[in-house]
Image (cartoon, rainbow, N blue to C red; front, side, top):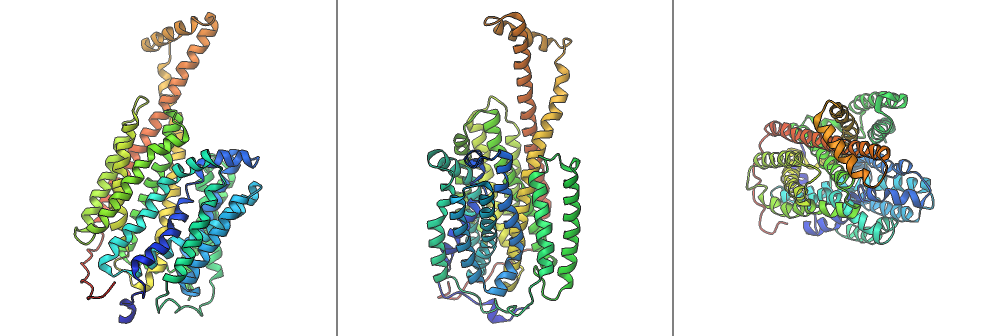
Length: 523
């Protein structure tokens, strides 16, 4: 157990000033995980690459980001948390400039790898700094501010990216990081400080074996998730090899980290029940959050015919709702039992998903906006208390390591959610099309009537043979749209079911006792 001085350490600067410093970096980094998605066609065209090749701009960032995330605790302890944070901000900012200046796809991918590596440690270090800077009774408010960056930024990313790309150039989605990065580095240099216990492992040997196994595991897993559907999953030999390598690397990594004296990642933190349960729920939340964020714009653009920027506007109320609700939820933590807040959040999350499962091709924009608003409210009611209760039973010295693992699993959950959406939409559409095509026969009166009516429409403009061909093509196009619509419906239903499955796990948390009020004069 840590000694008393370590438990009661408080920074010399006001915690809210520290929060502003680190949250600029967090918002900048998380925004970049989704801001480039909508600009991919523009990037591909500008750099003479195919759209499939351009997706490596996203994959390379996510792979580098995932490898660094769980190392955050070790990096902070070895080099000092403040040094790592400022170095990451500088590296991310310089890499953003290189992304904007990229003259070919390979140079852009290399710059994105550097950007992902710099951004990987920023979020968990910022979270650890904020948790340590505030007394326990104010951590709910701190995590509410943190949630604004982690939850709202990826929702707003496609909208901001679409607006910048349409009005300026895709290069400016990277250039906008420069002033933010410079300001964040300067403020962090002034306001952030290391706790007295943070350098206890400065003489520890570098765990090169652990780093190698971690890098292989996460790199192969992320590439499988990003490219699996495109390669037809396990029908491709390289996917099978990558999966085998990923599983072996994971098992070896876990065994090695428990064996070595100075592990790169301290996995013993999973012995804490609140942390273990919290990680499972956060992984599920990540899958639903990122999966829905990926799926809704696809539905609006491919089936409803919305332009990219218009679909981004339709998603914006979700981010606004999450932002406003987070302000309220931060003040409720400590006043309302966190278990009940989590139950409410997951119930609302399931409700929003089931509401979206009632979409059709004639819905208005409001039919999508209202469930999205409920979704944003639900995420705020989950994210803030979930982070607070997950970290509640950990000593201050464990928070840096735990924060890296916690954020890693949120990102991996997001990658799994996006891969799930991509696969289900492609394969679900095929299944529904196969089921519905059986009704397009001369024995089906509805089909015969529809075919005749469609032929009559086309016959006014062309000859009978061409009119028949056009009628069949029109009916098939309707069939294809309906098949894809049902695939979207299936995914929303499954996301709703996943949210409901999270509710029983909430009651596995140990109750968190209210922390005593701070003495007069405390931050």
